[in-house]
Length: 350
Image 1 (cartoon, rainbow, N blue to C red):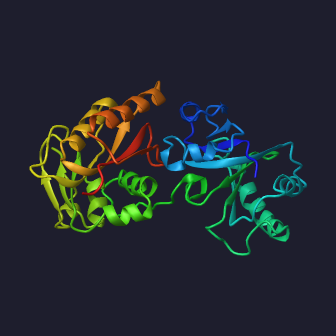
Image 2 (image 1 turned 120 degrees about the vertical axis):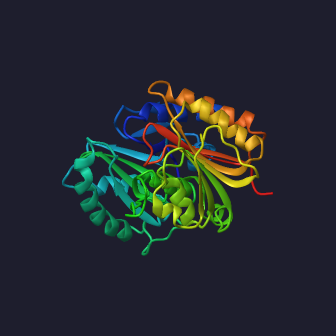
Image 3 (image 1 turned 60 degrees about the vertical axis):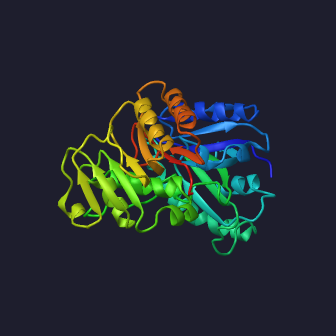
C-alpha cells in the first residue's frame, strides 16, 4: 500500500505548531518532506512518500496531533451526485478494513459538514462491503479508514493502524462531566490518563492504595479524579477544597504553596495544574522526579502565545536532562486543554 504522507488532526489555531512538530520530527528521523496547512483548518498534512514515515512518528509521541493517519489519497472536485465511485477507485488494492469513520475537521468553518459526514458514512459502508473492502463486522485488528471532508467536493483518505492512532472519532474522547466533579478541569486529568497511558499502563500504575500529591489542588478537580481511582491524596493549596472531596476519606488537605511543598516520604504519583511559566513548571517537575519524591507525574505546561512549539521543545528537554533519567516522557495537547499541553513523566516502577 502506497502512502503519500501523514494526515493529522489538531486543535483549531494550532496548525503551525503541528506543522513545525511534524517537520522537525521527520527531519530528525532522516525523512524528507514538507508540511501543508492553514491556520484554523484543524488539520495538517505532511507530504512524504517514504514508507517509514508512519513508524518514525508514532501517535503517542506526537504532542499536537489529536489523530495520526497514513494519508493514501486526496480527492478534489468530487461530484456531489457520486462521491463514492472515485473514492472506491482510490481505495482499489487496499487490504481489508476493520471499520470506516467519516469525519470533518474540528473547526468553525467545517462544522456545517457534520450532516454530510453522517449521511455519507451511511452510504459508504455498504458500498465498501460490496466491493470486499470492509469487514462484515467491526474488527479492531484491521486498519480503519478515515474519510475527512474538508469541503463538500474535497476529501482526504487516511488509514489508522491498530495501536497507532487515537481510538476516538476526531481524536476526541467523549467524556461526561459528572455533577459531583468539583471543576471542569477534572476532564483534563481523565483525558490525560486515556491519551497518555495505554490500558496496561493504567492498570499497573493506577492501583487502589497508591499515594499521590495534587499541587495547586483547589477546588479539587484533579484530587477527585485520583480518589475515583482509590488513591490516597495529599492536596496542596492555600485555597479550599469542595467538602464532598474531603468526605471521601482519601484526602489530606494541606494549606501550603504547591510550588514549593515537598513530601516527607516518596509518593507514587504527583499531579499539578498550576498557572506558572512553563519552564518553571518543567524545572520543578524535574526536581520532583530527580529527587525521588514521586515515580509518576501528570502536569500541565501553559504555553506562551508565540513560539509555542519552541517552548514545548525547551520544556521537554528540561525534563529529559534534569529528571535524572526517565523511563517514559509523553506530552499531548488534549481536547480539554486550551493554551497548554499535558505531560506524563515516569521513572518507572521499582
